[in-house]
Length: 92
Image (tube, rainbow, N blue to C red; front, side, top):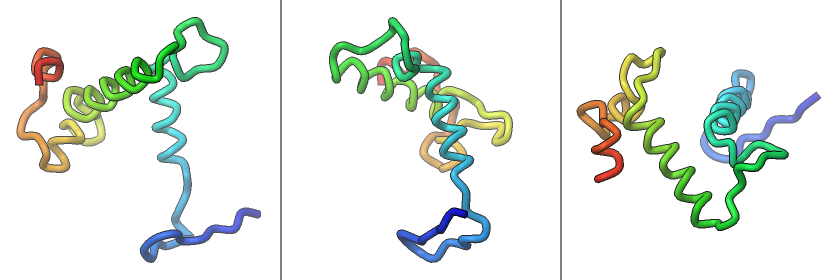
């Protein structure tokens, strides 16, 4: 049996789970092969890994339309007003 403890706020501990975190980790590992075990696509420099992850999160949140939302997460959160193209993502 697992004991759940609230670290911040007052969450409903009966409804809490780690499934959304595990799904995000799975998606990240599927996209970024640098994070999988026993791979040739490793990052020899910390800066290269940070850059690859930043690019992934920016694309995921600003460019990729999610089926459940029908918009990007940035649009859903009110941060962006349109879907970004790759050129806009790279050039800022």
